[in-house]
Image 1: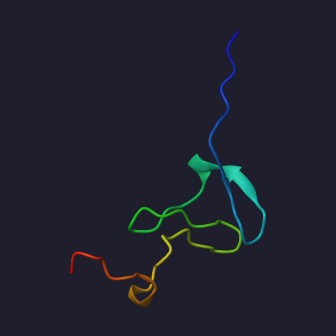
Image 2: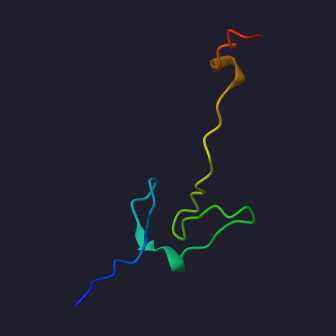
Amino acid sequence: MSTENAATFDCPECDVSAPSTSVPYDSLGYVVCPVCGYAATPERSSSADRSPSAGD
């Protein structure tokens, strides 16, 4: 007998855990916590943090 584990969403802000099929997504497809409204978006990197390449 096989066991399937459903994918879950674990909110880093309020520590709620919910099945990923029951959480809403924004217009860009990022998950939104149903309890606190936390939106999982990609982290932005500052251009000042990047060093110029040696070929430039």
